Length: 285
Ligand SMILES: [Mg+2]
Image (cartoon, rainbow, N blue to C red; front, side):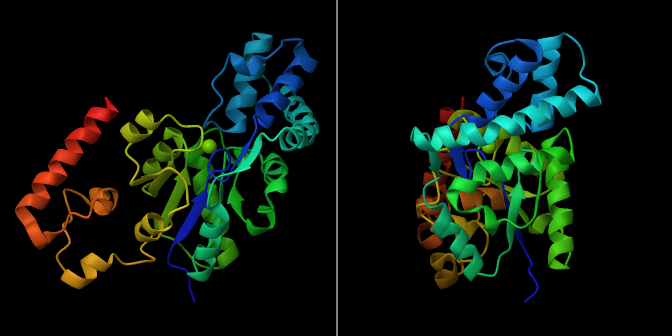
């Protein structure tokens, strides 16, 4: 069967929470090189690529733009300290899988939907962070921090690798990005890909809502909205009645599909939908 859709997962806060191990490893790398302590408390690392994080950490600590050699040193030291930090996170109970992720991956496999990584982590770092989850061997292709300074480039690289691996090609409308911060959404939108987020990662719920993902769920414990979003499952109401309200956009259709509003009572349905939209917009302010 030729795959007609592709799912790409961000890593931190989307598949696992590695207990701040990346931040701690970068802190140590920078402290060793420049003596600057706790550098990550002074830069924003969430939802950024490692290239961005290594660059801004080194720039802040040294006062100048890091050259390729400096960048290589930061990366080398980061990767040296990361396994120990991940081990500490596991030992300290700070390492966790996002709820329902194993079941979601199995559901994708059963539905014949291929999936890979679309993460800001450099490749070696990504697999070090994934290792304790038991999920690493499930991810055979992906886009990584080393593929570019910006997340949108990382995602394009991931799609290219997926195409090569699966010997097929994907239109942007067949690519589904799952993340946990607004940067995941922006990078997906920039490429014309679909986007969804989990709110149990590192993103702020209001900021996420403002970014406008097509689907927003706390985690993967309820697979129904995810499979509906991916078009793997059909909405039984829509199929039965053939008149499910598709509100203003297909995005709204997925986002509000779980309200149970349908065309059985069209006038009331639209009224309640508008009310819900208003309430959501208020929450986003
Ligand atoms: Mg993330």
